[in-house]
Length: 149
Image (cartoon, rainbow, N blue to C red; front, side, top):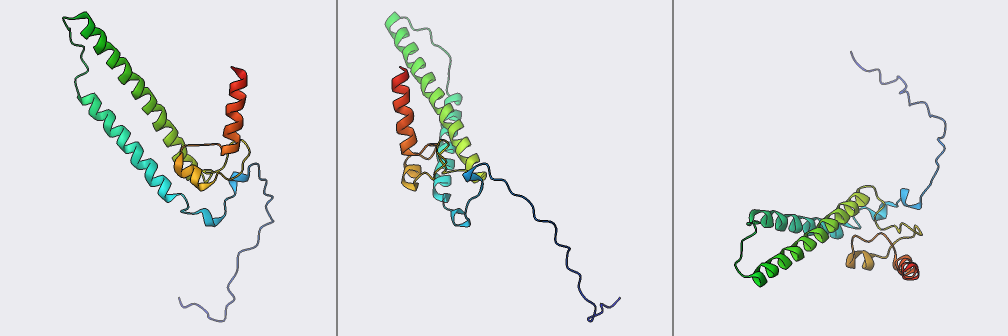
């Protein structure tokens, strides 16, 4: 069937205007921020991969406790093991923070201070990519924490 060139094309019926409620400044991001954090995303993904690769390597090594004849050698080995455990716990927390930062990037809320909702300066994000607070709010948080102690 041939299309009739003289027939009018129907345009969709315009819908009633939708009401938009904005609860956070972070929900609406200008298009200029698209790709703004690509370098930071790359760094975070690389750091995450390195931590996980190192963890897999550590699991591949023998974890078995050796029976050392000398008590001081045994104590030293246990201290080393406790130190390694603390390092792994810190790395786990860092991986979690990296995952949260990557998720904020996906949601276009990355780079927005969780406390004052202002934009966190790029140099701060580059230096501390998992941060959720601007320098002013972080300073205030540390002062409040100091008072609570």
